[in-house]
Image 1 (cartoon, helix red, strand yellow):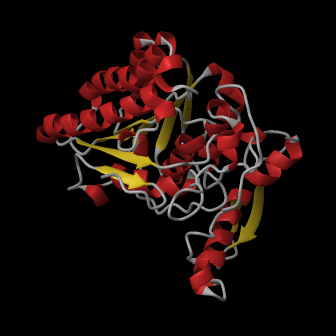
Image 2 (cartoon, one colour):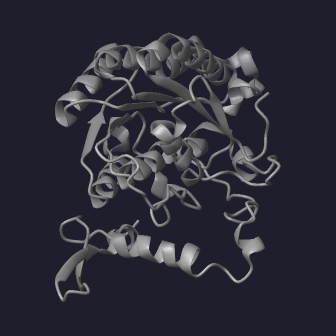
Image 3 (tube, helix red, strand yellow):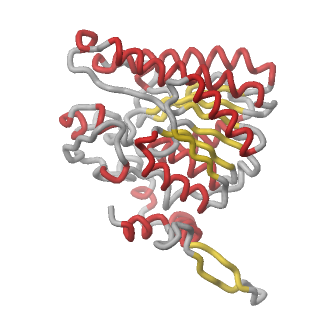
Length: 349
């Protein structure tokens, strides 16, 4: 993607990568500094609040809010890259409007460089939180843009490259976040690995099985254990589960098993940590259009990805962000031990 195109979308200057500033005069004649990103937010408010669409029924129809046709056949090498996706996912860059619900929060999101993690990072930052996130070293390009989006919202960003299959790295991630932000309020265990198999368990290798469990379950265990001494009453842990934990696909045996384990750990941790004033919940996405999909599924499945949902389309990362914000804030003060499905109408039971 050309640099000028990226800057046009993010509101970042070509020379510095920082938000472009413009000036405007307030009622008292004082000159105020704003950014193109602020203007995008103002435009979103104007479009969706001040000037609603002429046909409100069409504007609010969840079937047509995002593209619902077939995707182009596409493949990528793991772990995937956002800019190579057609169409590119919506993380809320131009639409998410914060309401100061997380001012002063110190947060950590694993896998925050792209997909659901980036959408949550944008939302947390625009709500006022400082955001640390992990990513694989191969995802540096996506991570750099996420840092810019967090900082453009006026929040501090801390990017932490490494492999969560390493227990020592998980411990370092918590330590660096606490040192940089002087504490931790919200831990989002979001990073995950999946890879389809064509013949189910017959071609599921021990190496892949081990990698999936280390990435999805062990990392959650190590991070949560390391974070616990720093979490005060009012803190929250949010785990990313999946509809696969309830309706496992034969081609995702190992991945589905890890998501069922995450559900169980969410329930157990909520029971265990409730007496400390720490809430633990999970979000179970359905088919969401993220860079994880093209590298891990056959092209023929990508073409019809998400079309089997009742809403008839794949979800976008931006459509999950508000759920994570809800679970991170006191608005959900009596919600713990819950798994909230964001599935396009597919049931979890």
